[in-house]
Length: 426
Image 1 (cartoon, rainbow, N blue to C red):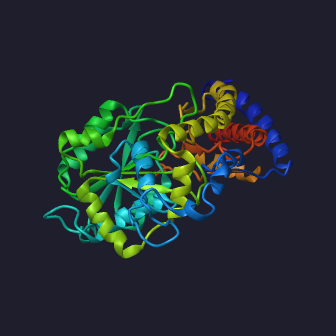
Image 2: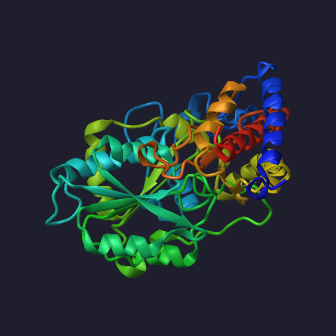
Image 3: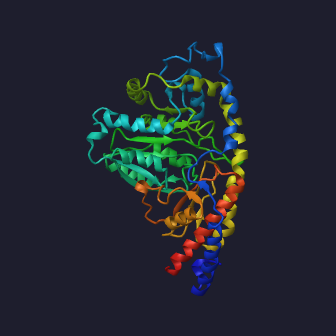
């Protein structure tokens, strides 16, 4: 039954059935979590052997003769910089390998630009009182939190099937020098799973911002996280920027958090020579060196990009059925009711669902009452304010498949129940 075309008495009957199903589910005492994109145990187990590749004697010595147990090499060991250079498609000289968190490196990048001018004639951002940042929506809540923390006005930019609406981006940045940057998850975006088109990447590279210190925060978190046999391809933004003489605009980030061990992986950033000089000056005051033993473990475990990609095939085998479970339930339960739209991504970690307008918060609340924890409604918008109250990010990776089946059954019951409530004015 399509809820939007149904008669009131039909909706009343449906509401009664759903209310009964909801009470039955509440009585099961479930405790299921789909709140964040955490790898499941099967995925974590794939990297256990890495813990034994560095364990004695000369094993601690890197390719350049550096004893990785000691201080030094702020930019990271050569073999790990080369590996990330291959992953990001840049020269290893443009790479810095840090700790376990790329989010940490993004925070540090914004922090650095708050206190040091990034281009001649510019002020540190903290001196720009009306500073602004562009935020493609729906997007990644933790990106928005960084710019919220530093007092930026955040401007929503709608996402299209090809990435951020570049007409909006070009119009805004060309006229307002207080707009200092934009957040991007260019491949399998969080949460929609959209990969930026070649045209979108080229238009980013060709931007002519009024702010000479404008930065594209290019968080390529899911650059090799394919879940289908027809993976998306992403154009290399750094190479495109070099063609336009704009290589100082992008700052690239990635990590192995969802490849090996979250919290115990390795993160990296890549940028132009000018940018790296600025950032390394800050890091030189902040830290003597990061965990080189962990870098060495990762470099020896993977050896090269081919090794990483072979490892990701194992992840794909685990993740593909999980996404199929989510999409199966959405198709069978919400599609006939006409109360939802969702993405069908070729990779990444999320499925973005738009439930009936004005019901997302209620759906999340009902799911919580039934023992299923979701990402908070509105989290995919700056300051947690979804103007339509409709977007919910589903993270299917962590629960075992049997629990995921149950969680999606609960989600669909709650989405339909909330829609009936809304349409009936209850």
